[in-house]
Image 1: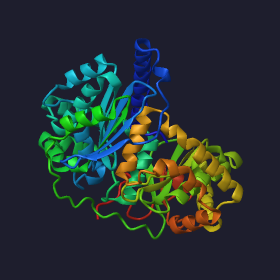
Image 2: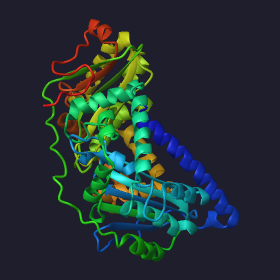
Image 3: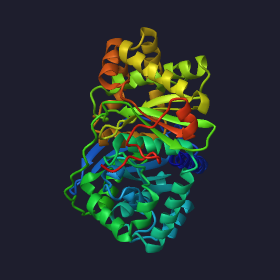
Length: 477
């Protein structure tokens, strides 16, 4: 499944890497010795909490003359009011569209003139502001970040432009069956609770939101006490700290009391089926349940278990059974999304409408087999080899390091997370895999969403559960 948000992210990533190549070329031309400046080390050199509560993590990386800044503000779509889904995402989209210091056009022109990358956005749990520039332009990059966090102006003309963009994206997403399936799955699983709606919201709420709502969300939800800023790159640590204190230290926006989140739903006790009627030849299917939060002590055994079940590509059981042996799907995969609150566990596939019931049955059987029998020693060893071998790829660039450091700090994973990662993966035993499969998988209570022709699907036995409206959304309680 490739949702519109993922495609947009892919385009942004491509643009960022084009900029990276340009930055590296410019740096090497100006200083041919930079390639030998020193190895990259995955360590935070200094952790500081500013007087206003903002947490600051600084890491000097000499390998390339680049600096990455990643700031996360706790909140995101998780704290959207139940009646205004999309508020956090709309607010975040305006943070880089005008501040007291620069207009939207000036911000874009300044970043482009320096060959840098500057952006803001929202996720389920946070709002982020990111910058990626040559190290020599560090102060400019940090000025842009600090102003977007503390003094965005939400210009009316930019509010309307971004509103049109969001509405256009939501409208286009209706033509993407995978996005429709995922939206219906989250709605069926979470309802009005956190994570039950797309980050972008829905057309009705996006049309209704006013500029005043965005300003109020920024004032109420975005504060230095809820913010983590990570700076990684070829800049002296003391220079990083001095400028961060100067530009971020006077951000004074006390955090308002927050109920934090509406309570998460209880796990379903019986299977539920949602059918979203679309005239398709290929049905899009999502099966799953609520999963775990990122701080769950079973995270590493679940990571290994999921790799064996459906996260390991051609080595996974689901792909071997559904694609290789049965020939029913080109691709099928599973993943946990461990957020601050328990996120979803999803199994995603596309198959011919005529084979949908058979494919779903095979998936359920594999979930049941994992639940009942766990993994073999060979499967365990292969998963551990892959996960430990792949992890260093998350450390191979300045931007990746900034992102990883920010997530480690946000989820409270501890300063030793990177150095102990491989050890903790290797410590998972076959007994652990079976234990967490039995504790966390609910093969008899999976939510199943199918996007395809309703009448044809009903003829093969796929019928929507009572209480599920025809658009795939959950009725209000």
